Image 1 (cartoon, rainbow, N blue to C red):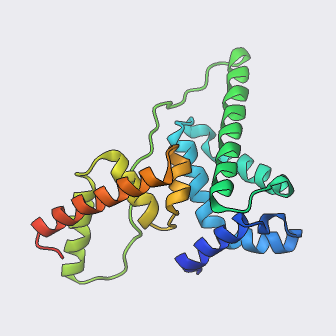
Image 2: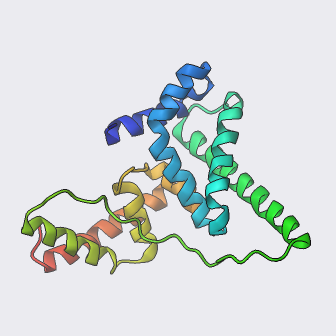
Amino acid sequence: MSSELDLQKAARTLAEGALRLSGSEAWRVFSIAWPVLERFVRVRLLTARINPQLLEDCGQSVFTRVWNSRKTYRGSSEREFWAWLRRICDNERRRAQSKTARLKSWMRPLQTDCGAELTAVAPDETPAVDAAEREAIRALRDCLGRIDEKQRRVIELIYFRPQLSERAVAEILGCSPSQVHKIKVKAQQQLRACLLRRGIQ
């Protein structure tokens, strides 16, 4: 299993131009970075409140579009890469929603839940841990539930696997990396204080 460092390095390598390499070379890096890319796309689509029934198909369309148009990517930085991927996500979401709207006009309305929101990403299932660790995990989950929703979302995206960079989170949320950093720092301070009140260092 790739380490978080390998995933982040692969995503940066794609951003720096590896996406334009020959098929097999690009695919090797793309495959390593897949968990990070998949998480970015899924969260971006959910943040845009896509109909849950369209999520999987739309996600596949995004990656098909990314792969088929990889030679057109002209960026060489992480900022340019995540912005490019965000635009593809947004375009594919609009296409999917437009297609569904056209189908609805001549078919019976689909029974869907249009109120889906991004929910808290649960931390990885932890292997057997002692009682103190279980208590610390429980306390962290409780403290995460007490901070602002945007702060919680930033912490989850940056620290829960597969981890996204601050730059990627900024593209998902539609704000600047400096704003993401400020939100992260404030959330860390609040979480630290909350955990200290529970006697956890």
